[in-house]
Length: 142
Image (cartoon, rainbow, N blue to C red; front, top):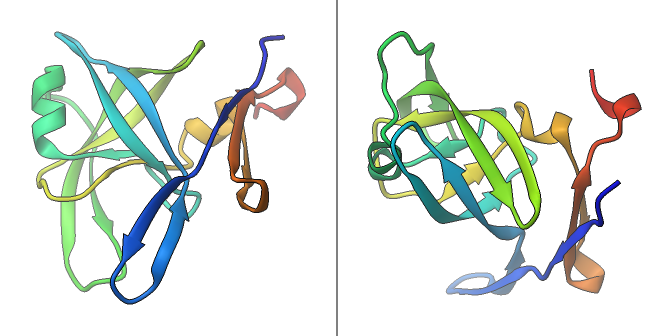
């Protein structure tokens, strides 16, 4: 079994809330034509991992034959996405996941529950300022 990865939370300063810590990790996505690194917010409330339009275009993702969906946040609007297979590498951990390639930009890349939370065990240890990632054991997989 591989060693777990540990990352500190990313500290941000927000006008209304003050200093906050967010679970953010640097990951590499392997697309059909190119690899790219990006910061990902680990979002246990997101059903699907999402990448902005420009990042998906850079990776060479294609909408042809990809399942289509709509993602909705707290606001009233919805953004279309195409569900595309990619490779995800965080440190020494490598997995294949499906990621939603959005039709919009202007938001951070998100790691949501689909595939990611089945393949990786993720601990949010905010009080000790660390995120711990490890491969899910065989008994943990569906």
